[in-house]
Length: 490
Image (cartoon, rainbow, N blue to C red):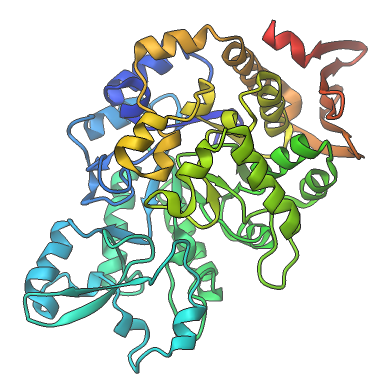
């Protein structure tokens, strides 16, 4: 069972400049006791593909440049360890797809990959193509000529280097089963189902989060559970979809929380945040920042469904983030950089808040007091700012928030008041017993109070957004202590 403690999200090489062993040393040294678990971002061969490991050539092997399965075992010995099951696709450079390119339908791996004809055997109308929900601009098909002389339209939901898997056929099932078995044998106890909402495609639909997708997630979760692992569904969609998905898997991400916290801080208004906290799934992971951008659609309207924020509020939110980052995020978002998502703003959370230490700590405090198990991204842990040099070098928008760190950078960061304060907040979240109890939230306008209670112990966060004043109050029977959040920056 997953520990109810803060987890770290990180790449092995980008946080240390080295490998999995160096990450283990960091977590047993300067960060000892800070985290209860680690989401180790793709460590498969290769870690430096076109999508930073989310386009694996070999999903069942550790990239030898950063370690081995034995290193994974050691890392997961005392910590919860999460790994990505990349459900939807595999690299075009994989030996399986290269064989398909060489032989066409004569390849033994032909069935592993999804083509347009698999879903639309009688042809696809223009209306059917427009109906397909896609996270990135352009067509979701890439025509490729194979060695048999024929050109086939392969399904490429994300990029033309990420070829979609046919998860309905035996070859697709066997491919994913092999990865699951590897995880189970090497101390991975949590599986993140990456891009799972796109896995099932069906003619006449938008090919995203279909009824059949829910059933598929059900089965995949049960399979992982039988191997001793929990599952997390990674899906960016309307907030009501998250509520429904939460009923089908062990846990979901609360992707609505990051934009709602920003909205509250930008407008001194907690109403949308409190509305969400009343109905949000309790079996969730909370994040503010991740290896991707800051999700927007999760709080906004979708089609005829109203959002937690309306279209104008979403526009204001995005523009304020751009302004706070001195338009750096604008350079990394949308058509300004390659490999972009339509529903995310690429920016560090720290810069989205204008690099204001108190606002950043307050946003983390709200995250830690919200229902769910919190995760902190490595860039967020060290309050990193936008990496414009890396963005310029790669022109990959999300690299603005995927910095390469080393021991010297980490040592300096650990001495920054905002980082020290964040670590103190993490320790409170990890140690106070009331976080295993009942949650309640109340307030309106610019004020709110988030509380947890277990027997005679309570802990609460009271915030006045307008005055930028926040107190953490702990009660144990007749004893009461209060901490001003500003004191964490002293």
